[in-house]
Image (cartoon, rainbow, N blue to C red; front, side, top):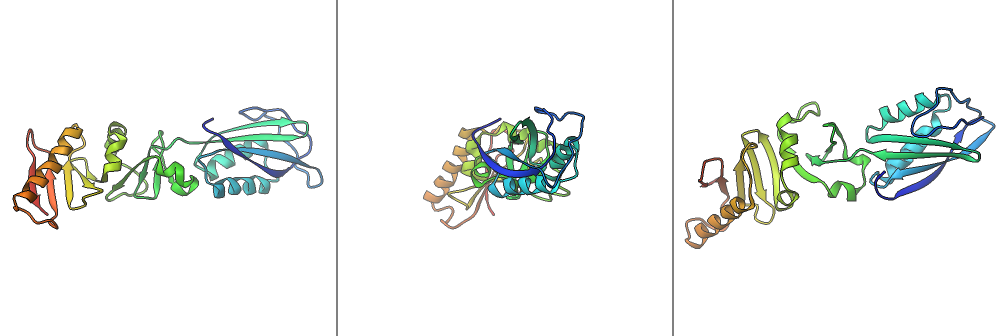
Length: 236
């Protein structure tokens, strides 16, 4: 369980409680509308408050579910949830909700999990989303990413995504547009090593062209680094 979690108190209608931690007992609990007990929710602090409230409301509505049905239903409805731990106590119950780790934000809409699933960014709060690598992917279809992307995201340092706006066209064409100088776009391939010295060389080469008045300040420059020991600069 990562980080601090916010506890939200909700109501779960239940008669006789059974003990369970991490997984539910096989026995079902009988739901009663006349006998109520408190359930304390301990949420992963990366989940948004809206997501937390939706989970509480969803559990309150599952008045005829067995424990196993309830845990399955939460996983199905909220694909951001990785683990659920439930413990029954004499005066109520404790439910601990853990979220999936997230690796990257795709097209400002989907988050990538370590299991290579794409889930909606709205499940998570703004701080959690802002902490991951961010990139665009052209021609994204049916929430499926090319296999090569996952290894590339994992291999690239976080600093790259802070310095450049990254767009994946295909395996042989990845565009890195400088965040502070959007007139400079570097083109690379997924298989090649992208080192800081190479990126700095592109920036320096553009500065040299500008100082020699070979380009104007507003010109958009493409720096192609897909060639061995060469940087090919051209106007876009």
